[in-house]
Image (cartoon, rainbow, N blue to C red; front, side, top):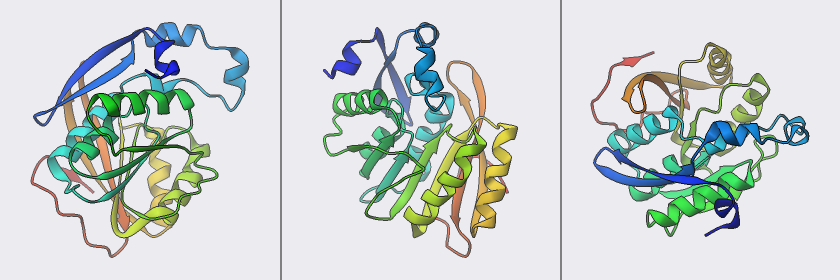
Length: 232
């Protein structure tokens, strides 16, 4: 087990993702982890350990992927992988996944969880959105709960412009935050379209998660199954 995983009290959560059992080892007490945060660490780029929680937006996006997206053989890039759930589901559905994060501890947990779910081919890499350095474009770019700070909007759009394949789809999930709205206006200014699906989620409470499908303007939509109503 990775030393990052060993140093935290953890608990295992088993999720049913559209009939697919997924085991996620997570921090046992997120609030206790916040209480131990070093102020100097926080002052360095205001880095909080958001990676340590399993957020509803990630659970909803995992279910959306499993139900709606043809993933077998597709190249997938995950931004801000956290504990690794979304990338694991994509890998279990046959995708070639590169999961990235800005925190070494997140990558350690995501790698550990991928191994526990038999995703031997999944890959992991440290990546700062402000200075991305990847070698290819991706059929899918996935991100859950990352659009909450305006300072990240321009870097995220740059990632989309550089690394989303023509005909590809970026899927961003979030819990309907008002401060995320300017990000989608910026996306449209840079030649993308955005279609929003509201995904009801009953998991550790009841949630209405917004899942935004971003594509190049004029590109055909990725084939999907029928499901929840779509809001433009």
